[in-house]
Length: 262
Ligand SMILES: Nc1ncnc2c1ncn2[C@@H]1O[C@H](COP(=O)(O)OP(=O)(O)OP(=O)(O)O)[C@@H](O)[C@H]1O
Image (cartoon, rainbow, N blue to C red):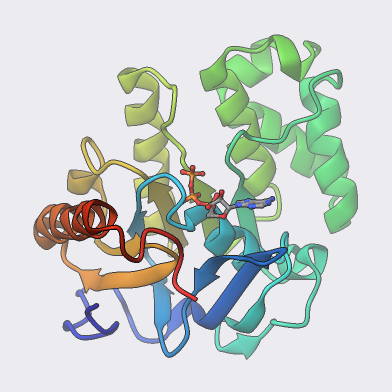
């Protein structure tokens, strides 16, 4: 397994990482989902970092543990400050936001009510909710609709708008593009690029690199809960991911190490 932080940092990384996770470990019962023992992953301000990994590689566990939504051990640094012991709400108040896999909206609540829940958690005024609604035209048109009746793309817009309510400096997006039409994915990636230009540090997870590689600044490959390679330039990610998947297939064929790293 390649060690982390072996390649030069890309030009978009002006200085210190906005988010750094180190030695992060997440388990569910006895199963180890993520084990970054001796490894680190950084997300610089002003750029989009891609976290590539097959289903079950541990992507969700990593972003959820970074956000504090699942319990993990290890170190999480937000703008250099240790937030490892902070709750998810505290991390959100300090500038971190998550667009979770599956969006996790309240389906019976309206668009506005979904945003109000987060605004209240963060102690934000009604104007923040208004701005959240205005961020995407479909949300403005469907503001009184229940979240559950929105299309997949509209639900993702609502989840992103909710994440952006507190104007985060670090934005985690877990499988942003799954199940969405390419045109919607393109629009959401445009938004992400704009946020990065404004200095936001974005971490995007995906099981596939297609469509995304031209839009990210750097990335990591995650295999069986550990960083296999990274940070890498976009041009090098596909080959590293193909190599990683090949090694997993070889392990499975040989009957060894098919499970997670212990
Ligand atoms: N709540 C849970 N309870 C038990 N095991 C879990 C739980 N959540 C995840 N796992 C297991 O942990 C491992 C990593 O899962 P995780 O969801 O973090 O991976 P992932 O890369 O995000 O995969 P996917 O793309 O399928 O969401 C998998 O083996 C998964 O089955």
